[in-house]
Length: 172
Ligand SMILES: Cc1cc2nc3c(=O)[nH]c(=O)nc-3n(C[C@H](O)[C@H](O)[C@H](O)COP(=O)(O)O)c2cc1C
Image 1 (cartoon, rainbow, N blue to C red):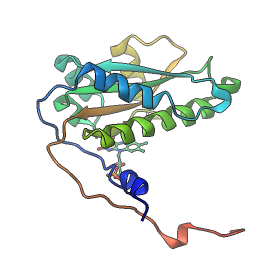
Image 2: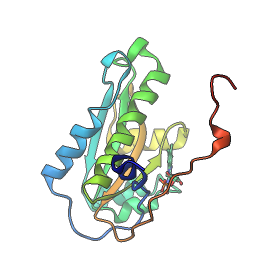
Image 3: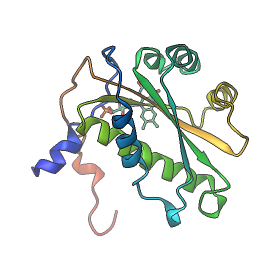
Image 4: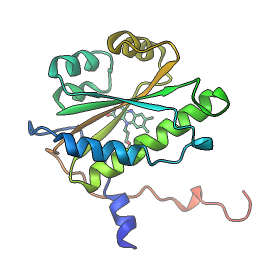
């Protein structure tokens, strides 16, 4: 397998982190990677809220039944989209663009030796309302995902979930 594809396979969800803080320069590199993602009509409707305050991280964890691990992360990045800025002001484009940015962020984190996990917010109504309230989001801003981030305390093995029956050639 090509060595660059192996780097993509090495990205796994990491859910346990050391206490080591993530340097500002590293966070900036991650955000540069996120904001190099493809975006419909290059509208770049994304916004990123970096959270380092452990008290706030714990308060965000309260909103995420499957994401309590963010309370113990060195940082969290909440990926949001601006519906007014999205291509055709369409929610689907907003979600696709923000998801591409989130995956870029996860891949960059993995390649830089960090651990990260995507924690779903959208489309859960309670989580959207909770993040709106706790982060003071304007009404046009939609929280899509939270990324828990830190130096990894676990290292899941690289893998693909490649399945031949998911691949169709020329037609279904
Ligand atoms: C939209 C979305 C929402 C997710 N939400 C959560 C979550 O709430 N909690 C969690 O631990 N992992 C969450 N994940 C991570 C998946 O569980 C994980 O990517 C999947 O099990 C595959 O494992 P891998 O990332 O190690 O390859 C989410 C992933 C996506 C794409």
